[in-house]
Image (tube, rainbow, N blue to C red; front, side, top):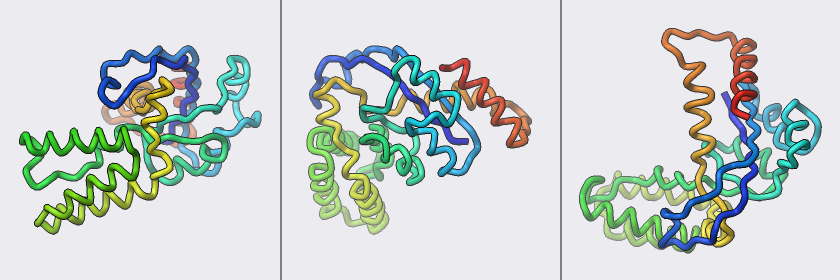
Length: 217
């Protein structure tokens, strides 16, 4: 099931790479969700500005239009294709969860320091800074599996380098995470549809998804 959310939120105070964790963003004033088991082309049509579905009327009523960047919970190519035609997109900050384990182990002080350095590089300098960080790590890593993991992560970030403008997002008081979408996947859709021993037909689960989205919106 694919899930999309239009969210209208006032900008918060400008933040830097040092204090962005402590900032308090305003809550969303308007949110419009839509979800369904559909092919990406059909589902992607809902991201536009044409009157294709019921959520268009709500977005029009509350002036909730795709005029600013947004974070996404999922990173599959079909997630970016249609929205990118309507506005500039930003990759959800939880992309760093794809980081590989470094040679010192995930739970050691060395690993924590490496992760912190990567976070700072990605937030402050985008692709160029994180590429340099991964390159330096690869040069000092002997394990072949770790080098392969670093190459995979570097390639993934390179393909999405245009969506790593976190520094500008923070300076403008905007969100950089996709927590709202991921929370909706878990609480709005998952909690209702993933019940014990539940079995669904596509047409019926899509109808239930409409009700879940109506309550959430």
